[in-house]
Image 1 (spheres, rainbow, N blue to C red):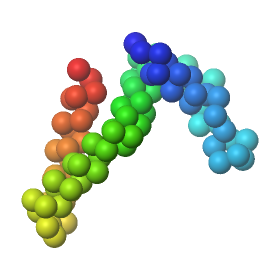
Image 2 (image 1 turned 90 degrees about the vertical axis):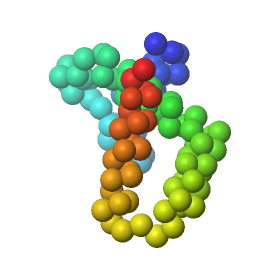
Image 3 (image 1 turned 180 degrees about the vertical axis):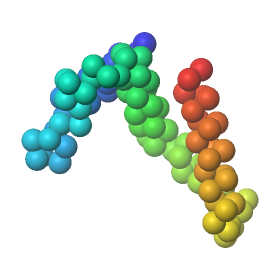
Image 4 (image 1 turned 45 degrees about the horizontal axis):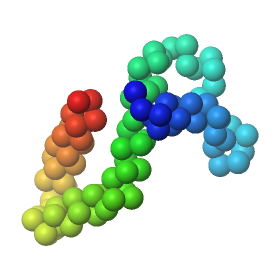
Length: 93
C-alpha cells in the first residue's frame, strides 16, 4: 500500500465537499466498508491524478478520436465500457 493511496483514502474523511461542511464520508459510513475498499478507492484517485498529470488521458482520447471519428452511441458506450474494464484490471494488479 503506497503512502499516496493511504493519504487519498484518509482524505475522503477529512475533506469538506464544496466548503459546505458536508464530508464525503462519515465515520459511521466506514464501518460498512472494509479497509481494502477504501485503499482501492484512494489508489484509483491517485492513478487518475497521475494519468491526468502525465498526459495519458489526452493521449488515449486522441487515439480514440482518430480511430473512430464520430461514433454511434452504442459504439461509444462499448468502447468506454471496455476501457474502464481494462483500467480496472490495471488498477487491481
